[in-house]
Amino acid sequence: MGQIILIIDDSSSIRLAVSEVLKEHGYDIVEAVDGRDGVNKLDGRKYHLIISDYNMPHLNGLEFVEECRKLQKYKFTPIIMLTTESDEQKKRIGKSFGVKIWLKKPFVTDVLLNTVSKIILP
Image (cartoon, rainbow, N blue to C red; front, side, top):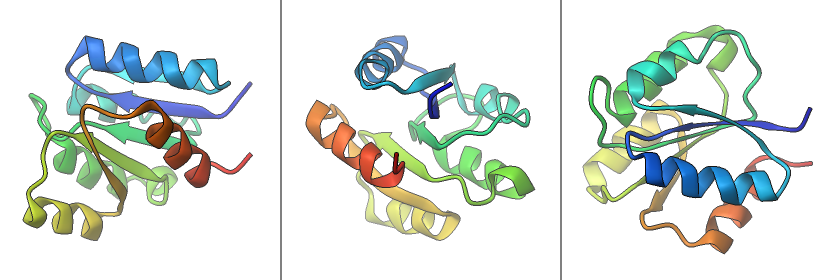
């Protein structure tokens, strides 16, 4: 089994695009349709990385991160926020919650892959 990445985004086309790129490079993918579904997928599995959108129904990206960090097993799992959101205040809050990197949508494939490979060492 390869390294597992949880992708959380309410846009099925974004989930598909990110999943396809990462699967092509050997990563195993688990998808969640929003922040609440993302929390439900924190079921004890080992995730090497979580990639989350910011603007989602039920729980937004920061609310998801806040819930994620309450769980001992996921306290230090690296998180990338992949979003159209560029508000500096939200970025600061994200960083304080433990978001490692804030990537802009639409994503550039090479940038996404380079970022992921730097966070998840083989």
